[in-house]
Image (cartoon, rainbow, N blue to C red; front, side, top):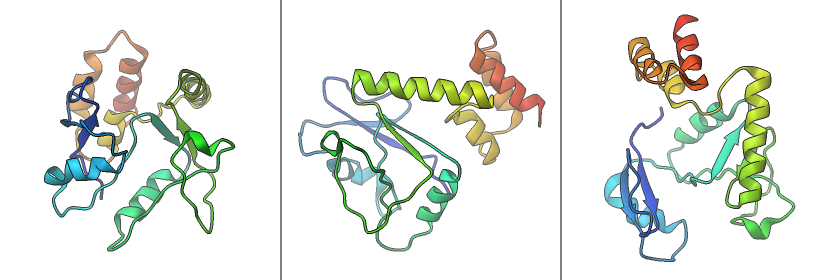
Length: 170
């Protein structure tokens, strides 16, 4: 249902990202150009473009992603109404979805706002937002032993303690 393969696109001055099949872009052709650069990696497989300076949060978002992966033609575009669309890529829709927070982190101010939001939600719910190990564990991509091994490497951090609690509560 979900791909664990990924590639990254970064400006040449930043170089390819670690843990990704990174590619550098010398072009100012825009974000959609990532598909052209990533084409050898993607091939004929279904793919998606997620911008690195965004956080998505909301109930049912995983189901929305799963629904999008079942498309046999066309595309699914996730969008969100904002009061200052000139800061974002603009797209028009006939209907708007509700219930998912889309937090852009392209400026210092918006990064701080997104960080405060995530901190508030995590503290109130006791759950981490976008915890790769937790997602992989629940999807069956890694086992409890791998989660525990990762947690031991971070045992003094809140993140490591969260992972340990995840394994112990199974």
